[in-house]
Image 1: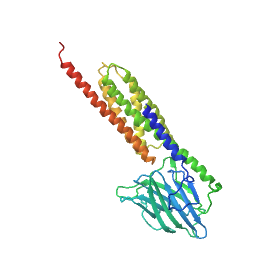
Image 2: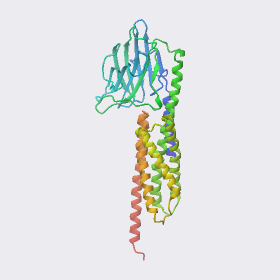
Image 3: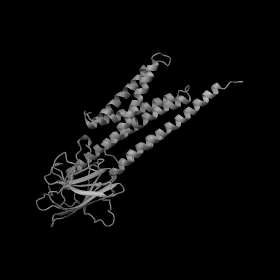
Image 4: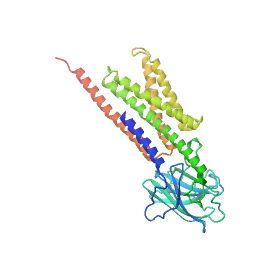
Length: 384
């Protein structure tokens, strides 16, 4: 059980750490010019740094996105019209197959765009990118000109996966209708905050919503994804080692009961955050998993006696639905982590848990067969 508590604590630390980062306490490496203004963007845990020169209407931009996977792209855009995605003028960066960062400009004209390279509605004299310690940054100089209303523009930013052919794919659909869009005034000195009063309030709401989804993910990972398969290991191997001892049954029931209670809270949280829409694959699997687990719990009250003729059929149902639930839970945990666009270490932690449980299963399986073989040999040996 200490393993599960450690995992949960690790997830909580990651969440709190990501939320505690600010743009003001960041120092760019040597050779990178200092930026006078910055803002913590509320979605994806990213940051915008910039310098603005009013006399030339020039802005030097640095958009940072920590905890970016090598298989992800990042984009930050200005929308001069004050809209959201359509009409935005984007700076895009991703890690190419050669290992270098490919940074370029892309005008987003349709929802079906693949962020193809192209000129923007204003000049971009320079654009470059870097990828250091899991943090991707795109740098650019924007020649906005007098026709760009920087005080009325909006900024849009996004992170998405790369396709296997090295082309940026469609970005993740953020849960709960969260939109990474904020007012932008590059000409305004960010030592004052009154102009961003509304944006600050929106940022707080977005952070709270993102944390709620993180809680949903932790609850389901610990319950369906960890406690559920652990309970099966307890039943399979502790029962085999000592069938007459009922201790395995109480441990098994405790693991499965805790998994069901915590998992139900996680499932209910996801339904509340996502509304009644279960049309996504993740939501559908979650609903099936909840139904299967509920039937498993109810079936305990209908369990026939060990010597009853129907007990064999009940065992088949119990084992089949149980292993199906485990398979679905593992698949759905990974799908959920992808939907949340999480820190890569979260996946690594969960993968480590599965490897640990799998290794324990293999070890116990070997030990179990050794015990069975020894029992059979002992039974064949005549007693004198």
